[in-house]
Length: 535
Image (tube, rainbow, N blue to C red):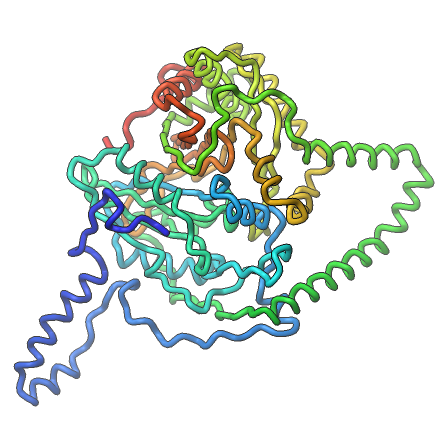
C-alpha cells in the first residue's frame, strides 16, 4: 500500500482534496434545502448540478463483468510473458526482490487536479494495463493471467498531499522511497500516483509508481507520453474513450485458459516445425558444419545467459535487506553527448565508465580497493508492437578503475557482445523457465550482482501535465536484489540519474554519492553537474 496521511511526512491537504471539495459544496446546499419552502425546494431540484472532479464523481453504473469461458479465456485474459512472470514471482516470494519503478516529475506548479484525474481516466481506457490486475492460478506453477479488473476505482490509485513548510528535495526522496518500499495491493491494478504540493517556489512533484511486472523503463516512458502535453494548454483529445469490458477469471476459466494456451503453443510449434523443416534440411545438406556451428553457438550463448558471474563480489556491498534510500544526480545532457563524441563512444559507454570510475573511488575511500564488479544491465528487446515488457538482463563483470579509456573500451565491447548473443531472442523463454526452479534459488541467483545500471532514452522536448510544466524527470528503481541501482533518464537537455542503495550494503551513502559524482565529473567534465531540482 502507498503512504497514508498518518505515516507520511507530507500532511494531507483536506481543503484541496476532491473529496473535501465535494463535501464542502454539498453541505450548504443541504442546509438551504432544509429551510426552503416547497416551491423553492422544487426549484432547487431543477437547478443544474455542479461539475465535480473526476476522482470525486459518483461512480457511474458499472457494466457487469463477464465470466470468461472457452476461447474467451485466451482472448480476454492475457498470459503473462516470461520476463513479466519472473519479475512477478520473485517480488512475490522475496520482499528483497520487490520490483518497483518510480517516475518522479518536478513541476513548476501544481497540476490541475480535475484535469489530472481525467487524463489518468483516459489513459486507463487507452492502456488497459492500467485497469488490469493479475490473477494467479489454482496451482503455483501456472503462469498468471492479466484481466480487466471489475472493481477498478480510479480514486484508489490517485492521492495528493501538502508537504510541510520548509520541505526540501531530501524530504521528497524520503516520501518516494517509502512509497517504493510499500507493496502493492495485488487484488488491484499495480500502479499509484501521488502529488506532493506546496514545495519551495510553488513547485510540486508527481510520483508515478508502477510494478515492474507491468512496465519496464521504456514502457514507463511510453505510458508517460499518453499523459503528457506538448503545450501548456494541451490538445483537444475529443470524447472520453469507452472503458474496456471488465471480466472475471475463476478457477474453471483459468484451467480452460491453461489448456487452450498449451494447445495453441503445440499447434504453433508444429506449424513452425513444418515451415522450417525444408530450409533446415536444405541448410543441413548444403553446409552441415555451418549448421552444427550455429547450434553450438546458440548452446554456448544459452549457458552465458543463465550462468552466475564467476568473479568475486565486492567485499563491502554484500548485505541485502528490504530497506533502501534514493539519491539523484543531474547533468547537462549536451555536455554528456559532446564528451561521448570527443571519445568516439556512445552515451551508454560513458555512463558505464562514469559508474566504474565512481565505484573505484568509493572502494578506495572505504579502504577496500577492487578491480571489478558484478553488474546487471537491462537490454531492451522492444519493438513498436510490444505491449508488455521487452527486456532481458545481461550479467557480466565490469572493470573498476580510474583509467577511463580502458574502462570505456571494456564497457563498449561487453555491451556489443551481449547484443550479438544468439540466445537474445530466447531470453523471454529462459525467464519463463524460472517457474520450475525453487523460488529461493532464483532469488539467491539474482542477488549475486553488486550493481544494476540502466540507461533509458527519454523525451527530448519540454512537456506539460495537467497545465503544469515538467522541469525534471527522475527514474527511481528499487534495488531488486543488487546492492545499488543506477538508472539514467534523459529529458529536455538534462540527464537525470536516480540511485537506490540497499541500507545493508552501503554503509556510507554520502561517500557513495560523492564518489559517483566524482566519476561523472571525471568522464563527462567538471561543469556537467546541475543544481537542486527545487531551487
